[in-house]
Amino acid sequence: MLFRSLPAKLVGVEGSGPWRDHLVTVATEHKAVLDPVRALVDEGYRSTVLGVDAQGLMDVDAFDAALGERTVLASVMAANNEIGVLQPLAELGARARAKGVLFHTDAAQAAGKIPLDVRVLPVDLLSLSAHKLYGPKGVGALYVRRKAPRVSLVPLVYGGGHERGLRSGTLDVPGIVGLGAACALAQAELEAEATRLRSLRARLYEGLRARLDRVALNGALEPRLPGNLSLSFHGVAGEALIHALGDIAVSSGSACTSASREPSHVLRALGVGDDRAHSSLRFGLGRSTTAADIDRVIDRVVDRVQKLRAMSPDLEPPAGGLTWEAP
Ligand SMILES: *Cc1c(COP(=O)(O)O)cnc(C)c1O
Image 1: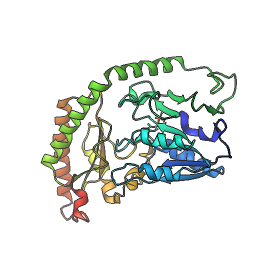
Image 2: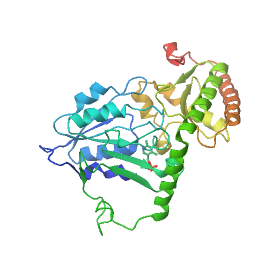
Image 3: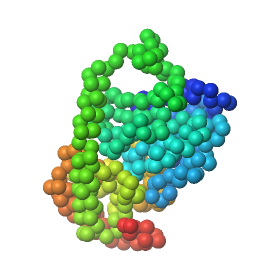
Image 4: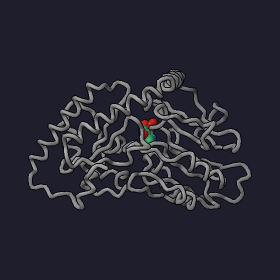
């Protein structure tokens, strides 16, 4: 997305004092943030990649302590793309602001799903992607604060000075109109849709837990995106379950990194063992999901998990047992 090589070009806050070459981010970020941070480190920047607790949430004081005199930018995602947990943006942004550190949030998952208002949030840069909120693929937006503080960026692309010199090149008007329309629709439906999805998610979670044991929830149940449920089914490989589920679309780990067989870096950051990470599944509920869909998914998942478990009856009980109990 747009953010990919953004901080490489960062000039920083006006009058920001000494040369700043330090970046702060979080282990559970999307690769769209982690990879550019790594590339910047190759260019000579320093980085601090903070951990999260077992629920996937950040510690605001640890974040604060990581911000130094030379920190130019901190980047923390609003909502995680695998486990859906929401980071405390208001508190984190306030700490960054108090230290004159620019605060970027990757809101690709959060935009259109939970309230986000840059007039209220202490966020200096916010990126989002249209296709995550039912808009067209290939278009996104970067919010850049213009006052208090004024964020100045050097362009990624030169050649005509479009968009206040920030990004030259003729604009993708259909894409932009599509993004705008998608945002307007999402905004109009946001509250009702969030309530509807929370109730469907509870139906799914409770339905599965009532009929299956050894189901673990990955990440805090709240605060979490209304349409996200990430579960691990002990003794069942996520990939095998996906295959067995047929036309039910679920994912193991991130779609963007699913080509790799590595266990999810997000679940690892939560301290989840490899076996539990490999048996995780993300259910994404959205605009077209109905209660009938949920009931069908429950029946299918229960049946397939039971069958797959029956195929490996010698399965070791989970180490430390309790980690497999849903909270
Ligand atoms: C999908 C996603 C991205 C990448 O956005 P694209 O426009 O699809 O490249 C970045 N961050 C998060 C959290 C995402 O979910």
